[in-house]
Each structure stands twice: as C-alpha cells, then as structure tokens.
Image (cartoon, rainbow, N blue to C red; front, side):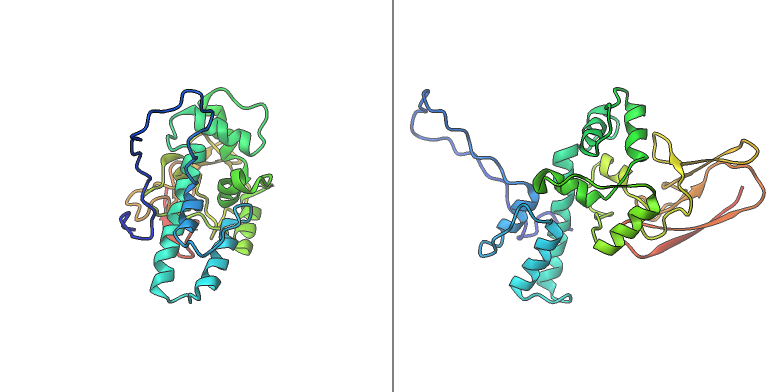
Length: 256
C-alpha cells in the first residue's frame, strides 16, 4: 500500500509557542493516539469504542459508512486498517527480532513466568506459546487477558472462526511480527516444537532431527513457504502451507 494514502493520518507537527512556558505548570503534553485510534479518527463522525475489538469496530465503521465489500473506498480503508494493526504491534512490542527486549515484553504479555533473561530462551518460549496476534496487539487497549491455545491447530481454528487475521504482507511489518506469523490455513497436524528461530523441530524414531522453516529456496512470499532442511531420509514429503492472512496454499515438493 502507498503510505501516502490520504486516509492515513499525518503525524502531528510540533510548532513552538510564541509565549514563554510557565515553569509552574504541571500539565503534560497530549499523548499521541495509537495507530488504530488514529485510523478511526480519520472518520470524525464515527465514535470509536477503544475498549472493543478493532475488528468489530471496523465492521461497525463499514455499516456506518454504508460500504459494501466491492466498494473501492472500503478497500482503501481496509488497507489502512491493516497497516494500523501492524503499526500498533510494532509500537507495543518492537521490531528488532535480534534484541531480547521485544521477546521479554511478549513473554510478559502472554503470561510466561519467569521471563527469560537470554534471547534464545525468550524466543523459544514465545514461539512455543500459541496466541492470536490480533488479540495480542489489542491487549493494551481492550485490557483483556491474552488467550493461549494448547496447539497451533487450535489457534488456527480460533483464528478462522473469529476472522482475526494479522496482515502477512504489510511493508510496515518488523522482524518480530514477521517471525511470529503462523500457518493458519494449514497448520501442522502434530504439535511440533519450535526452536529459537521459529523452525519446527521433530525428532524421528531413529533419533534423527528434521527442521521445517518458512524461508525456503525461491520463496515467493514472506513467510509463505516451508521446506525440509534436513531429515531422516526415506523419500520426499509434500506440504501445503499458507500465510496467516491468505487462504491460498503453496504446494512444495520436499525431497531429501
């Protein structure tokens, strides 16, 4: 999406006051609205409930504006809304996947205690806890406890049922969010453990280990492919995986 889209609010500009500041004043400068709140503020006649789910508020906005699914104005608004979701995640949790702090903040948000001190441990703890990323993004405003799921398949079922999809192709996405995207369309049948890089790890009967990651040679979409990196041998595998915000599966032939 073009970041210059007119429906995206411009950042406020600080203009110096011509009057001397009052050193006795205790007033604080106004807080900037969150990216999601800023999105809804571009529709001044619509009163956004900040304690409600952003997705439900967006649907209410569509009804308020009288938009249909094929309406170009709605499509532009939805693109801005998805960017706002991504920006809100970035604000709350950071973007640098090589820094331990974002992973520790994520651990606190999803209830992992004690919070790991080392980057490797914090990343593994987050990767092996299954939460919906939209719920995680909204937790700071809705004040709702983030729900965790026992398996990635249960998370996928919840995401499909509630239609709470985090955009998977936004140019504003940082490294942390990109690392957390899951295969919602076709999750793994078994509950596979992940390593610190988010790769699936499976121990075979003979003690061999296999890794599956999202990068794949010739990946056509960020996070969209899975490939077999190393395995026990015994023929190729065929996987169908999909991005979290897409129903399109990418079929990959995997040979040893």
